[in-house]
Image: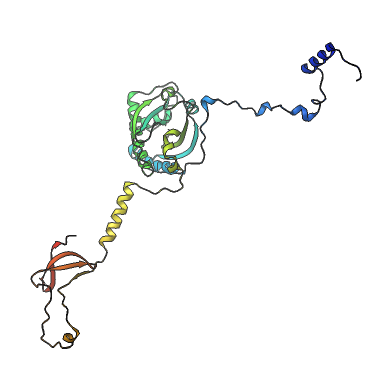
Amino acid sequence: MNQVLSQSEVDALLAAVSDGDVASSETSKPEAQNVGKVDERKIVSYDLTSQDRIIRGRLPQLEVIYEKFMRAFRVSLSSALRKIASITLTSTEFLKFGEFINTLPMPTCMSVLRFGNLRGSALFVIESKLAYALVDSFFGGADRPYTKIDGKDFTPIELSIVQKVVGLAINDMEMAWASIEKIGCSFVRTEVNPQFVGIVPPTDVVIASTFDVELENATGTISIVIPYATIEPIKQKLQTGFQVETDQTDKKLWTAIIQEQLLETDMEIKVNLGETEIKLRDLMNLKVGDVLPLDQDASGEFDVAVEGVRKFKGYYGIHHGTVAVQVTRPVEK
């Protein structure tokens, strides 16, 4: 180590260290070798142009809404088909719209819906085999779906029948949402190509709820796809565990019950025939036959009090041998 290196030897040594041919004393230690190194397996690429929306918590009220929708749509569909139809909710997922579209085959019966009171549109998807089964059932068939539907397009008559089913679903959906928000849902158009239903960009998050529909001889699925941005203004309502019902039907029901209870309530009615004031000396000296003048004219109107409150004016008289008062007019406030 006492030998002095020349400049050319120093340059050669530095070049060997930088090329990795010679290990330095510091880097030869295990601790020093790991300093500054990053595990490439933990590196995740991040695209700023398509960042995912952070969604926290569940939407319990959305499950309540779909439960109401299933009950109502089951009745509507069974009445329209004149046969029993069963509907159950299988899943509700938060995923990107592009991922959902990629799962749809060609053709698929997709109806674009518009929410008048909320921004954005929704998608009502009916599986192809279920759509053909519904058409067959409407025309009196045994709702047996086609065995081969790949590449088969929908005819205008078939699309009109499917639109009728979508109309039933829209009415039931509005009723189910009424307790949370008036959505004002309306039908826009029907598409069979998944590439033509760009209600939101492919990177936007949507809420896709899938329902299983069982007919007598056929089964299939329907899906309701709502963009997360559409329900974001009312997210707080959907996240609450309990929601007070504000349906018009409930209001009318409670109003009728309260009105019926009020009409059966007993009320005390009094008619004051007159008053006067006398001294205690005169009261002690009263004899049979004495007359007490009152402040009320016998032929004039009397005050009719309801629960101690003056409400009406009336005349004193006799009705079928019973003392009575005939109401003439209400008392002005």
